[in-house]
Length: 261
Image 1 (cartoon, rainbow, N blue to C red):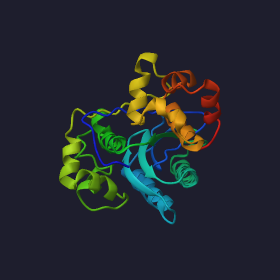
Image 2: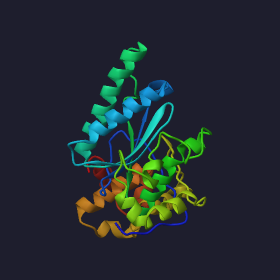
Image 3: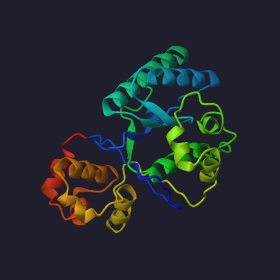
Image 4: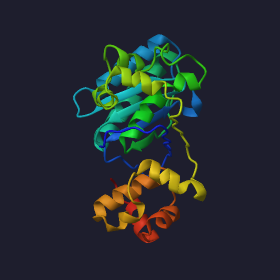
């Protein structure tokens, strides 16, 4: 990754039927209670979830970069391989479901059947995602980000318990740079769940996730080209829009969508 940040960064989160994973290995994960059901009735519930979260990351080549527990959903920023990510999320959701159903008397599913994953492709997206996750309680009108107990903000400015924040803090030049990031009101991060990108916005969205010559993608080796096409698709661009922006035939783009990263 190149080490830089921009004054304004927009990242689109879109659920897909076929998952697309980042070449960087960093994913923004969102898990929600089924039917927007409240996941945490008490601090005991939250502590239990955090304990399960820590156990899920132990013993595998994966790390947690940031987290935030909200009422009916959870944000996780994860660095891992796709197979590890699937195992981690399955273990975490299954074990918390068992706990939740036991203590509440609820039966059946607790989480929505699929978690959302947004590939993080650049350092500027990584920083924007960390900031967005830590600002979630502010957006919800619950508390100031530095007063909220249930996020990794305090780990970024103090003792680490659950996260590996070294890469992010190195990018920012330390804790003072992180504090500056959190005060940067010009940096935005938009989640658009299940919405397609209008044609007039597709080039802006494409350049927010791929800082490369879009027309030059056709000259890349097929595996690298296809991975970048999948990144564009995960950002909410249709096959038609990708073909229009890159000059790559729609059939080639469609075949790239059918492959796993």
